[in-house]
Amino acid sequence: MSKSSSISHFLLLALADTQQLQLLHFCLLLGISLAALLANGLIISAIACGHHLHTPIFFFLLNLALSDLGSICTTVPKAMHNSLWHTTTTISYPGCVAQLFFFLFFISAELFLLTIMSYDRYVSICKPLHYGTLLGSRACAHMAAAAWASAFLNALMHMANTFSLPLCHGNALDQFLYELPQILRLSCSRSNLRELGHLVVSLCIAFGCFVFIVFSCVQIFRAVLRIPSEQGRHKAFSTCLPHLAMVSLFLGTGTFAH
Image (tube, rainbow, N blue to C red):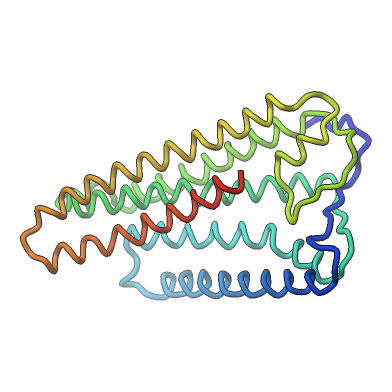
């Protein structure tokens, strides 16, 4: 990436002007991050130690927990430090690039893994006799590797698109974490098209994954409604509805943020 600007570091401005609000932000971030770390840590420990959980869906859940932990550890500690010390946080140019890259990498991996998990639910309910063939250990490993590789390429593409521009409109970012649109606004040249391109690509990827997930859930619902047993229908629904709620929450908050 070309670093043709004179910027050697970035400033991440404080979340609030008053010390009380900054302390409140720190406590909220601390509570949320500890809850997320505890939950994901328990998931990883349970799957790693429980041999009866060594199934495809729990394998993907393990990868999902790892990506969630990665996205939290990439962004939240810096924001907590900024709130606790009541000062503007400085980060080097390479440090900002690394933080943004890993954040995009883990977030993209999380979306792709959620999409793969919907396929797992579809096969387990709609094609149970082919489950062992379609989702064997090798197939699961290949799908997980494809998710991580796609996330890497997506993050690399966005980073190359952003940091290839010279930055000269200051170095202060009024955000609690570093994001690509705020970096683009510091560009010397007009970056509207690049910012629009970043938004369109992100929404297209998210929309494509969401359509695939919804299609899988529709097929699952159709198969479930044909189950004569009410207990069987309830069990099938209970495996799909939490996943759909998690996907909706993930994509809804991401779309709102963009």
